[in-house]
Image 1: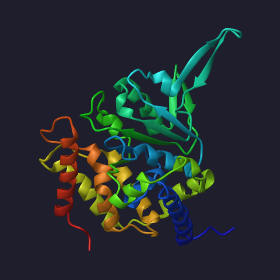
Image 2: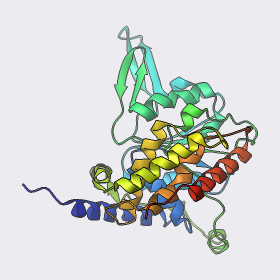
Image 3: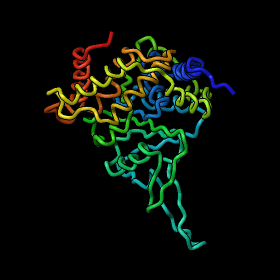
Length: 321
């Protein structure tokens, strides 16, 4: 049987991914760019971190994304007393049988919403590391595979809010994309004030099956990435490691994720090839949370400075013609 062409694969995958964007936009109004970046994180087999002040729709976006994909979904509300076993599960003694049996935690799902992840302790935050990186969990010397696709959507409040624990660099590096949603446009917010009835997310129906999701994730590999544009992407990564403005540059994991995210964005935008605009549009959301500004201190100022440094680097790294 003849294999479908790259253009045909990308066209079908684009239609499915755009259907996903449109469905989420039914409840997350006026934020199409944010929705597309969230979809890029899912389709690129990455993970998504939503960081913003309370009450602007972080959890709504996460729930809408999960509701739009026909896969298993669980929500984990992170608190200061949450333990690692509350996330990954553990072996429990069965007194009637005289044996230990494994009871899986909420991480054994396909889409996990870790709500307010920085309100739990670093010890519990670290319970997500292996799962996010290797799609597996190790407990008492035994490895348990997670079902594919596996996607973590974490929300967090800015770090200066009371009762938060900043995510360590190793944890941040596992997130492909970090986003801020921001306040809705005034017209959209006015409509929300007048809305009556049930939670709109509950009314969403899945528009993508698990098989379609895997198909689109595989189609990302078929998106063409010309050497000149790949060199451009790599120069941006190298610039983060050489500029005196940064104490820590982008890791190799970050560079690999940057490349795959650029392919995915091209597909979501309806193309079978990557443009420099894909690279530039993703530089902030994919790279800013992986770098450390020289002389920075904890807080949101560091985030703003990191975004600013990435923007400055984009102005000095030559764009391929």
